[in-house]
Image (cartoon, rainbow, N blue to C red; front, side, top):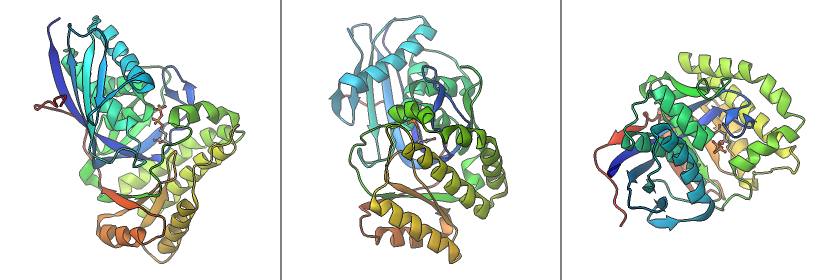
Length: 331
Ligand code: DP6
């Protein structure tokens, strides 16, 4: 094989109905389906170059050569794609996030979506969006939702092929905004992968999973109808159910900081006062405050004034993962 190169850009995404726990952790077949919105402007760009001269895979992330677990995870993912292409050639992967590293924004979704789409293109694999989404899932579950654009549903599925994500509405369908209130950029003690493994130890997980189809229906309908009130209620309930599972796992996972709770309470007060605003929280202390474009500036300012909020990132609905013509270079 001669050198082949491709570059892709992927958005991060925020889940409205969360993925938490796997039925099959090797394949990342989730315990329940999930729904998310891609985040425009919070992106990863990744160049993959397969090079017969390389003795091993290399990963340069935000200008720094990576080793250990981070490199191994990328290498394992490339192995899946190499097997599909029937080659063993090693790759140089150069990746950049445009959101601050360590800002507490999950980068695995955009990272593995961009990596999958770029690597498959470099390998000359001609795959459908559905196949790319299922493959991205093997690298990081939430990455399958960054492959298609806009508002996206990940169907839990029964096997590798059926567990994929698909767009349920394009980005222009609804001008929602995610205001990410950064409370702490500290590295998490237990990341998502470790957290998923603990989910079944909570007696609440079975109830959360059993009720997921109801929440998915409400969320999907709320998106179709642009019904903010219905969306607000269901995303807050879903996030709280996931955190109830986290907090009651063995050992317990408590991601919230005092400022997390202050923001949650402020959001509920603002909504009672008539503003379209709701919160959701991933596996960390930062709060994703969802509103409409009309209230973006006002709510961003209010959030920035809360003591303990370091900064506020803003993102509207983003598009699908795309191939780019320009490649990143190692220096
Ligand atoms: C809380 O997709 O990061 O953000 O598959 O182990 O990479 P891995 O987990 P990941 O889990 C995301 C968990 C979440 C909820 C969500 O995005 O649905």
